[in-house]
Image 1 (cartoon, rainbow, N blue to C red):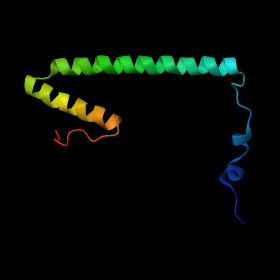
Image 2 (image 1 turned 180 degrees about the vertical axis):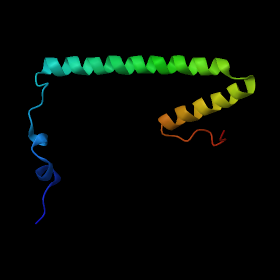
Image 3 (image 1 turned 90 degrees about the vertical axis):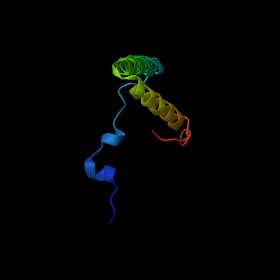
Image 4 (image 1 turned 135 degrees about the horizontal axis):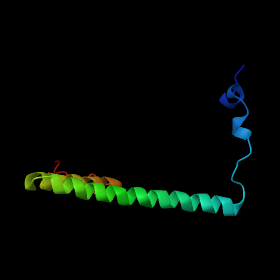
Length: 83
């Protein structure tokens, strides 16, 4: 006999969701957007702090790495030059 994993571990997939109303979901979504924005700004600050510690040669390599990363985000592999 074959059992679904949800049957084996209990009824938790069928529990009531705590945030039901659209206003509660909207508030939760906005809070998550705020957190994501804060994380993005922290990441940018960290990147600029790292860049200030590097030598000019290391900054060139860092810029290549950032360009590669941006290319990967867009779905491309960059310019193919490597690091």
